[in-house]
Image (cartoon, rainbow over all chains, first blue to last red; front, side, top):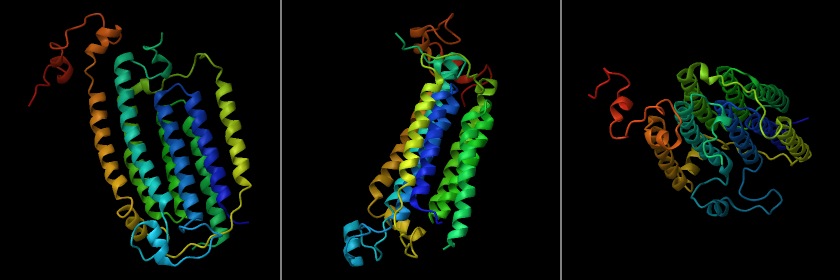
Length: 128
Length: 204
């Protein structure tokens, strides 16, 4: 038995579900932010795993192309025909997650200063 | 390249650690324990990236998540003190098992679907996942989103500073909430008390 893409995707779906349950169930704003991080990490895992199983620019069954043609299709002059779309996209997801954590924690601090609690159901000022 | 048995054992251990620490992250009552759970979750995910031969991404995961995000969480938990452990009691409008049950059903369904997906084994080229290749892609075709990410991070820093700095007098006056709601000052007289954090906190 070898580890395949399906195992990684199943693990990622379990992790995403854990994050989603945490986001839906917990009333602590900090834990809700941590659950968002769990979900983003699960998506990153799917991206990296899919990239690992599709490391070339062409589908697995297609006719083989020359490395130069593959590099031209990738849009940059590289000797190899390897694509790293998934890994590079995971970098950007990490960057967005870092920005989201900074802004989210700032919002939690401002909310605490306003209401003296970080329970998410205390954020009902706009409630009609 | 590790053999398939080593890969299987590593995947099993790391996925067990990942799932266990994710469950710990969402289930502990104390927020600092949740942060420790998130820490171990990120460590296990970095290990999983290594089994996928994404070594540079594993390093970035450790640096950015453990070095920045988890530390930021711990800072905020320390800053909030006892208020960080907000209790979870009280009933909402929707029963809690409904949302979590729906999420678990969706997750189980997607896990069943993707477990049946067995692609043929793709041989990695030896240069797959190396820093040279990933960096070549990052600074080649992906250079525009790379630079835009720096703009995003700058905007996030400015926004986080603006939000957390806390000039909430207008909000307090409008909503009647907050500590100074009983004695609201006009916003042009308040900033000395807002900025200084005390009588001796003068401006340098």
